[in-house]
Image 1 (spheres, rainbow, N blue to C red):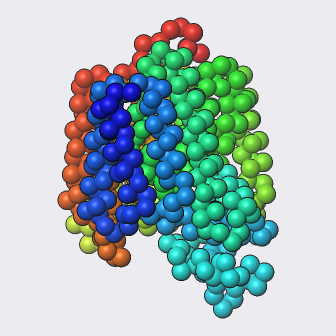
Image 2 (image 1 turned 90 degrees about the horizontal axis):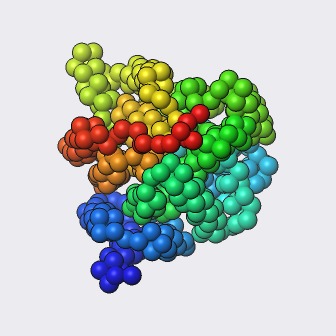
Image 3 (image 1 turned 180 degrees about the vertical axis):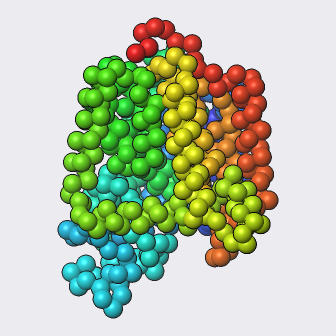
Length: 444
């Protein structure tokens, strides 16, 4: 290894160590400085040609730095543990809100000291759980293994996510080679600071989603439609967002394969949701999704412009109308993209899904940093740079946590999206988002 590369990696390790163990979320100045340092070193390592094998080893070792750390930049893991403890005790985590288990009418069979200790740390005690069955199974397993240890629970989740990232690395390298893309592009994702911090560090399950999506693509490219449907079911049962890929598959799968794919998707999804199936599940998830689209807002772009226009016209926040309308616009955009794709192949599917997810996040009312991990992953199959730039710029959203009031700086939001949209436009003008040149063997 070149001494300069070794020095850069050691400096990266120091930055990640400080982020993992010595940077509270309200310390935005320190947090921003370390993220800038980590991202600058990441760009330099990619530009100076860090060898693939050394990059893969570095990606593993840098992730292992986080292994015993409690997430400092996200408190979502407390809800993970809450749901996991309920499941490990034989309770349905979708049935009750946390405040229903700790109030005067709490259920005696679920109210215990462990839950009472976690409750004050929850960031959403008045909402039903929104985490699908694969997440719940992982939470339940970790809570069963470490019922009395918060750190043990966190380490168990992190080990599973590290295994998923290892599988992602293998699938990513295999697919890049199959589609005639440079294998070193895998380092765009594997060394990316946002991926490192938000997935390994903060325990967000986009890491599992990316793994299952790549598995689906790998299976479909080999003609295994039913297995591909099962892989997509696992992705959807981790986060609902992968459902957006469905329109893009219609012209890539002949009808017999499409039917096998759809049947496997439906059967596996039904099997995954079956243990939790109840009227409460449908009602409570529906309430949570309704709240997400009609109430939540954070680090948005087009929505904030529409919100300002709506307030000017009506005098109040129009999110209850704008949220569903923008979601419908995303669905329409997905259908148009699927209908107008030129010569759709498996090699061009990542590019198409990248564009569709980009549209979704540009129209979304809420865009947390970890949401962008799939964009970084999919960008490895193109020459586009905007997703990588966005993964660096979105760190500005942490400025909202400088105070307990969680007040956003619209100036920083404008800076983030201004830079990202400029790079996106440059990518289009320079043809970086064109589909890759592929052989006939990759065409359905």
